[in-house]
Image (tube, rainbow, N blue to C red; front, side, top):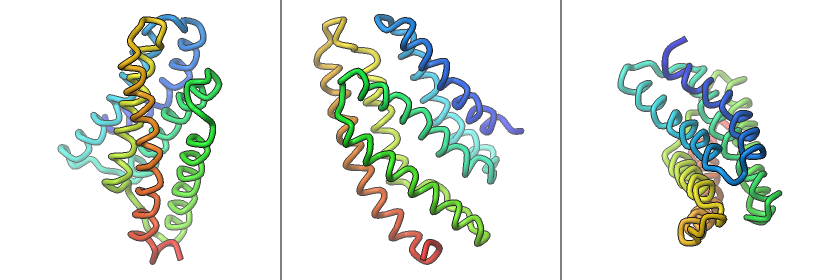
Length: 176
């Protein structure tokens, strides 16, 4: 297994660590640090895969899935904590399940659909917003960082809708 794929697997394994640390040390930045490290592996694995020409089928499927697992875990925690409403998370979950389903259908037809640029921008916005929220927690008086994080999460929901429409349009031959 190449280094980019190992980073993807590491991201998946960091999710339960992030969740556990969030609940054990709610008033600490430690869960934010773990989340940020996991988010950084997303950018590092993609960079290394392209730079070293190590793009694999595993990476094309698992990298977006690892991102979804990481982001959805944090967003669901934020709903539970009353930080964001459930409806934006439902929209994001719908899009992510639909895209994963379409990728599976495409795979049965022998086609691999990699993440598009709009989806990557959506993910970047989501991960930055979540990180800002985790490093503010309002407990420390950083309301501006918290508010910016929440705003970025809601912007990512809009980008979720836009990227889903672009995804459907760009892959209409494979999906239909």
